[in-house]
Amino acid sequence: MFTSRASCCSKFDEVLHKGKGEESWLRTYCLNPLLSALSDGSVSAEEVKAEEEERKVKVYDFKRPDRFSKDQMRTLFMLHESFSRLLNTYLSASLRTMIDIEVLSVEQMTYQEFVQSMANPSVIGILALPPLKGNIIIELSTDISLAYIDRIFGGEGRPGVKPRVLTDIEAAVMRRFIDTVTNYFREAWSNVVEFRPNFETMETNPQFAQIVPPSDMVVLITIHIKMGEVEGMMNICIPYLVLEPVMSKLTTSFWVASSMDRESSPEQVAELQRKIERTSVPFTVQLGEIHVTINEFLTLGFGDVLQLDTLTKDELVCYVGSNPKFLARPGTAGKRMAVQISGIIEGEDDANE
Image 1 (tube, rainbow, N blue to C red):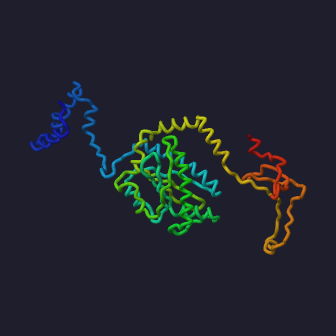
Image 2 (image 1 turned 180 degrees about the vertical axis):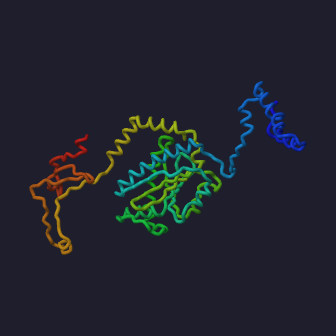
Image 3 (image 1 turned 135 degrees about the vertical axis):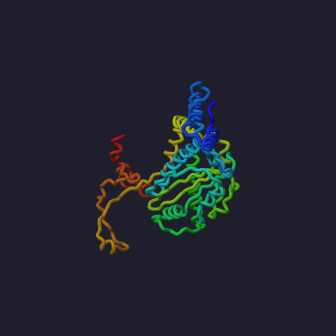
């Protein structure tokens, strides 16, 4: 039988001690037995190779055992990429500025590690997801929160604002924002599980946001948000106990198959149509234009009359959003001013359709 590596090493020391040559030792104790074992089939080349390779040891931390497989982590990444696209569309339309949202990472850690990673103060929304048990956390950096509030109140949302605790009015605005976020969160998860998000409370100090024991495992989804010139993070913390009932559905194949089924279902098409029909769009009528100098503008006062470039017989241009779509004639309807559509403006989009 082929001599093991440990046995060869001990015999090698013995032969050298007796003064015999190394070549004679190799032939006697290693090469000849090895060739004989390979020729009669008592040992294979793979076994020899496996015996020669060093054993690889993977460090395992029993304090934070892995709860999610790589496939489940990939599925969570794809789910929240869909959520990011939905949120991007909403913020771009509501704030009328450039928005860029992308998922940076999906990782598992203990809840204590997540709490220690949060800044103080932060905007921390605690949500319930019935029928799933337990709570999740949606945390927003103060940079993004203050920029969003500034834009909602008509500001430009400039960067460089010092982090601070929100006022009561600002907190109410952010609660409403998180409520809206949870609707898109529910829609992104609808292929896996149907739940009804409930906003429970909002905190600013991470130490007061205790939803699970510190040693429990959670999955943390980190999302980067760029809102105009301001950049910040949104963190979504989901404990393992919340996802445990649906772990079997967190696979790439299940998520893709569910997405295809929902896209082809009449119910999904009808729901999309209802959402489009309920979407509000700005409709404005331009009475005319006038060009003035800076000096004329500075001297304007109460009672001044500005003569527009539009004649009384001219048709007015109606805008849907920023696009001219209709021609109209001005008039009144009861006690209100009104316009009557007199024509449709054919644009490039209409020609392509």
